[in-house]
Length: 321
Image (cartoon, rainbow, N blue to C red; front, top):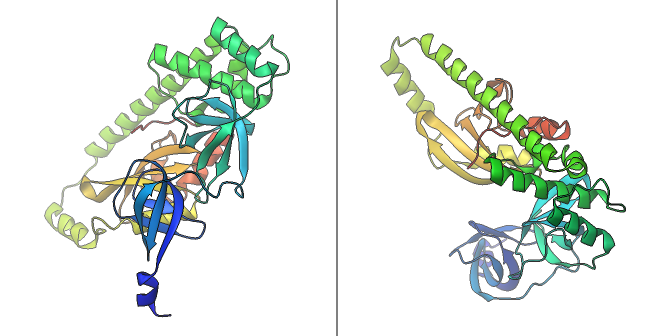
């Protein structure tokens, strides 16, 4: 193949841009030469680059998988109480708990497609939410709608108590929250806070023990050796590949002192932040509670540990961006 001809070839195509440095077609990922506002754009493709030319209407959604659920903020809540971020929402926000549909783009993102016909269950659930009642007395409410209702209660309690949460931490609890009401939501958040505080105390204790056992023999030579072997700053490819093999997607990264790397990544419809050693990719701080076993996993094995924590309802996030 004459790669000069490939690189010189241009193509015009409409794609969704969600922010960041790349945009995806059905077959490849392209670099954005000049970032623009998120939305649908007509891009000029040149080799591996995509140049935004003008805003455009959505194209190519009809053949993509459809996902249905209920609206909670800017998330679609579907079966299994999974609350996925919805991209490219309309300017006029649909009502909370509205039934919505989305399309699964080639990179896995959910693109808003439209609001669907409402039935009696949605109206009754919204009325219960407005009056501060749980869903225990409302009949005919589907599991996804109950989950969305539970997340709404959690969000309101989170604002009042000042305790943050991510949906994956409460995925196994939202049905009970919807049935029992605000008190159950508050207890869920207080439980998360207690677990985070216990994690922080244990982390401080481990750091203090480590400081008392540090040997400083030949520290200068050790530092020089470390500098010779450390990963070159800016080389993020190994970390990105490790996350990709684990089914996660790198979103952002930041180099820290001591040749450590902070990585922000998407996994199971959530956003996580972890700190790893840049050379070995051994985890320094998982960003989730691992009962002190952070150093026993690597960046590639960490997502499977997170998956198990989500599935068993024990996920506790300790690092937020």
